[in-house]
Length: 297
Figure 1 (tube, rainbow, N blue to C red):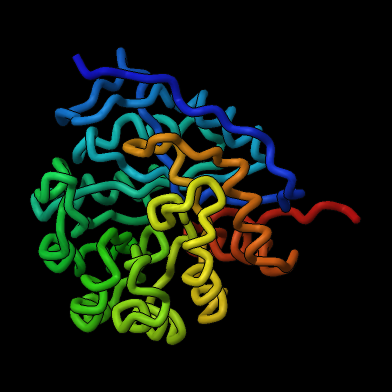
Figure 2: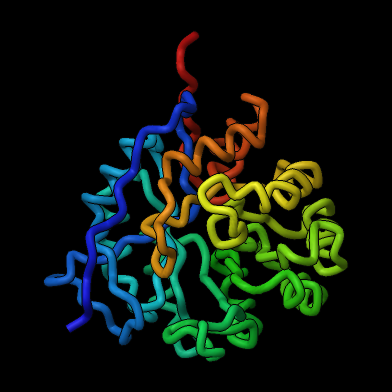
């Protein structure tokens, strides 16, 4: 039986979160008696069912979210789709599939709130592909069917891998969403050629990037080492940026506080209009949420 741990606690941010704000990258796990993992996991799974997830969002003042399929569930999105179904329109989902998936299943997923498929070229600590993940070769095979259904590609790879594959990826004519600030090499700095290639693609509107610092910065909990990359992404093209917490933080010890991470983002963005654009307007467009109602003055 897979070991489990409690989901990490969340505190309320200092930020006055705008109505319709979206956490564009988080996960649900369980309840395990109903949705056991389909893949063996090398780490304990957090007890982060949809109810726990909703409570964490409420604490942060986040009304919307995008669930990303975690590796232990492989290509079975049942837990995630159940959470979306019970969210009253507050959640969207990013699934995992390979070329064996049927057109009917893909269409059903889209009807149930899936807006993209995730493809991974980042390697696990043992150097192998994460169990249950699909690489860029799978994306190339699925791209025509994804275009027909309006799905985008969510990608997790290093900045160098993106730099090596951007031409191929852009030729697929899909919206491309890069996880975790495009996973730059912190030691190489924000002027490294690979990260500059990502910035160029972002500036041209060819990619979206998620501002999730916890897998990038090493200077826990303030992550000051990640700020030059964060600032460069905002300067390149705020119209193509999203914010994600990555809650409930598997394989991160100690786990960050999602509310504190939201404050880090707001402090670094430094502008209320920019915060609203990245938290509300951009995800509303990409994930096809209903327009958010602005708060009365």
